Amino acid sequence: MAEHQLLSGKLLREYNTILAMVEIYCKAHHHNKLPECQECQEFLEYAHTRLDRCPYGQIKPTCNKCPVHCYKPHMKAKAREIMVFSGPKMLLPHPIMAIRHLFSERTPVPETVPVEFSNRHIRKNRKNHA
Ligand SMILES: [Zn+2]
Image (tube, rainbow, N blue to C red; front, side, top):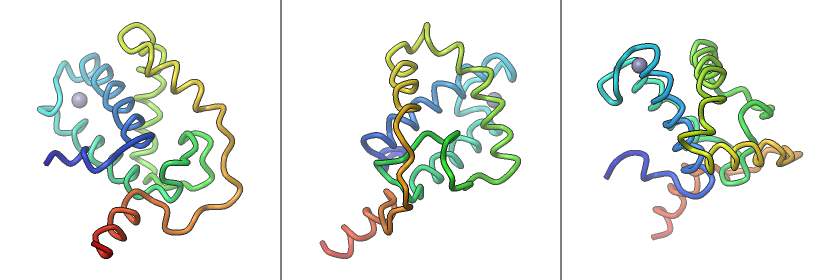
């Protein structure tokens, strides 16, 4: 099972959006393709882990509005670089993804961080009760 299949719903959609942005960025900057580009592949795996562990789970706000700073500084810098570069280029190849992302930026940030609500927690709890 591919690792990204651990995600579902909103988290999976967000992962796919990041994946599409990394592909655009990598092609332009590294003249490479995933998963051959080790640097970008590492970034994607990191982003995947952060999504899996995001305490907001399926009610996750967009990352630029999130009060929890879960990315390491250099990964955060890379994420910003990728989004600034690829964000505006998403509309043509991936119009639905781009529009959905704009709408989800308008979702309010939940007032409290939920407990045991991350994708990872839910997956582990489900396993324990099976
Ligand atoms: Zn790359």
